[in-house]
Image (cartoon, rainbow, N blue to C red; front, side, top):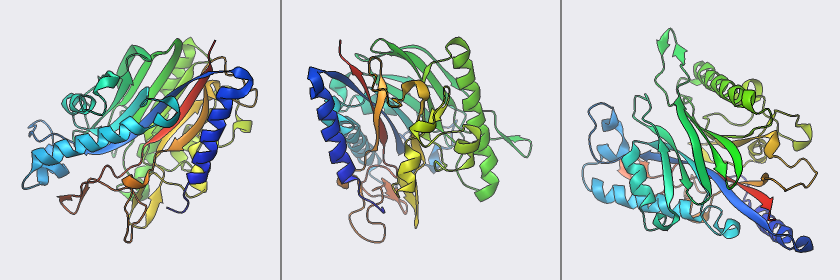
Length: 350
């Protein structure tokens, strides 16, 4: 990675502490996160999917041991995201690259997460590899009232692209209604010819957001995921029309705090010599403090990348890159080929 965000993290922690002390005010702090779990497949062959091509199914031995080690490692990471200031793991976390409901049940039953009482929202998607998106939520903080899987209906050369659904979940974070879209857009496989696929996925997001705003023009919306595009690319900038600067936000705009991070050289993933920041959380203007310092309702305080040293390659050509689980047909003992991203939402306690 080009830059180490340690100083920024220290500044954030100090800022949050000052918020809780200023004029005796106290704040609720909730963490909302996203994590691509890198091929979290079980060891059972599903004849309806191409799960034989998953890294764990390609292993010649010790599949069960590898599976449970990966579950333990991923759960350990999730348990630490936002812990410093929220004093607990994420209230809400979107995940990608999961095979089915069963692997999610194993994940939340881990010793690292079982006491958090996570609920699961998951649908089987039509993805040919059999990978899905899902939402996990701590039941004491978030109460879902509606959820649905929406397929973006992408076609290429008049043939349907069997990609992941976009998961819409609406519910109450404490007593505030929010809407979350969890995404995993088509990959860059195919180079520039794949650009229209992600633009079409982004267009589906605009349709979902428009439907939400028909009922509530000032709705609080977060769209998160592995977009397989960096923050400056057309799917985000031209289709979703994301904004980099808070000062440029207008009502109804989407703010992307990860664009500025990308321009500073931060990343959530890498392939060979190219770093990327595909994992992002986009936030509607109604969740952004634009300078009024009004925290009577939940507002985003900071956006972060969870990239602790233990999750990184320690040496070699790819030092500082995510320490992935699988490489060259074997298990590395790592975590994921993506770093998680997260935001702090804060609200003044009454």
